[in-house]
Length: 137
Image (tube, rainbow, N blue to C red; front, side, top):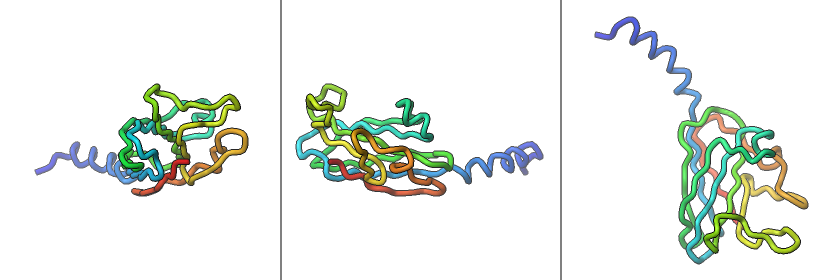
């Protein structure tokens, strides 16, 4: 038999569990050579602009592809920022003009003009379990 306290706790926690969602990400068009994929997830325009991710992961890219998941996220708008570190130095390398020379991508396959895309261009709603694909370029 369940106690009154147990039932109350379950009733209070149920809405929290219902609002949590899983984000599954497929990454395509990565380098054919082994590389490390760096993935950052942002939950607001301010966090995105300040480079303060709410979650991040690193994982190997194999044959140009990778799959990952962020579990139990609150409902909201999010942006994914990814790059494939092909030379193992832990950063996105750029040429003298500041253009990336390693593969990178954003959610919505958003592109920026003279820099990364805006939060609005790259953001997507997460209300329920979602699967998305990001193509690296």
